[in-house]
Length: 65
Image 1 (spheres, rainbow, N blue to C red):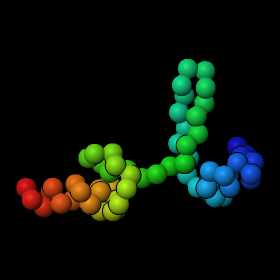
Image 2 (image 1 turned 135 degrees about the vertical axis):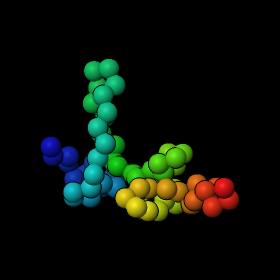
Image 3 (image 1 turned 30 degrees about the vertical axis):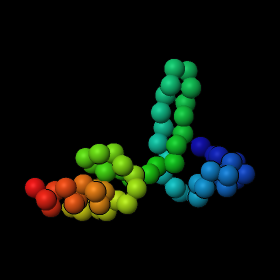
């Protein structure tokens, strides 16, 4: 699938960036893939650990338990 360069630049999508594909009724939605926390779904401040993605807030909570 080819996405026009003007659109990619506007959305900050580089060549070979991963995209998520959703279907909403009769619409196909493309979204730039952002890794999210396994536990809470937060995509900010995430860390890869044992092939899993965990945010720092959840890491803190796990350390407290």
